[in-house]
Amino acid sequence: MLFRIIILSLCLVTVVSNYFVYTSNINQLSLLSDAGNDAFLLKDDEIKKINYKYPSLAINSVPILTYLSRYDTNKNNFLDAINKLEKSMTQNPYNLYTFYLISRNYIYLNDYYNAERYLETLFNLSPKIESSSSLYFFVLGKNKKIEKLKTFSDKILDIQSINIWSFYLSAIKTNIQDKNDTIFYNAILEEFQKKF
Image 1 (cartoon, rainbow, N blue to C red):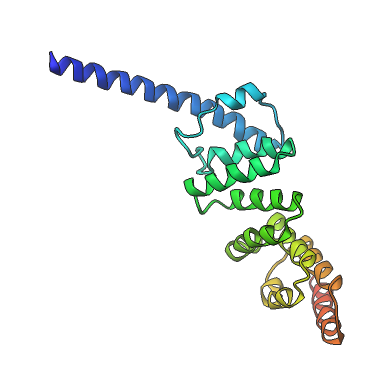
Image 2 (cartoon, helix red, strand yellow; image 1 turned 120 degrees about the horizontal axis):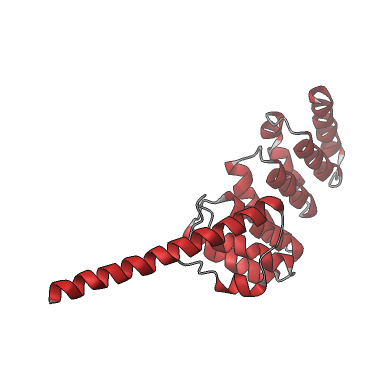
């Protein structure tokens, strides 16, 4: 009798677990498709039904909360999005997409200091990603960090993206304070013209 109860309990747990996995996979497909197409096709009631705790990561290891945060950002609920993204970081603290989205939400709030923190991590991990590196240089320009910008001259020389270079040059140009800054800017501009 006890054996049957144990087997029945295990079967019930397995069925419930499989149901959660099945619904999670369906939700993931919708969320991944939305993110890939920059769309927001799920309705509010569908979003509320998504159980982001089981499993917490999508099939590509991006936390489901990261994808759900996009909907908050789209509704200008930037603090709600940041809250979801911070929780996402506990689920996967190495996900670059989460870092990128949280930095964008801070930019929407005109909090360039916090945006810089996350973008700096992204830049140090992957300096050749156009979207995040360009945004990082824009933020450094907004924060008037010309000395920090200068320290990236060696890294920028290895980057083959005209967009990243353009943001880098723009950030330096708008923050020139003295003759040394002008000399540095002209030297970097010359490297840009040789490269592109």
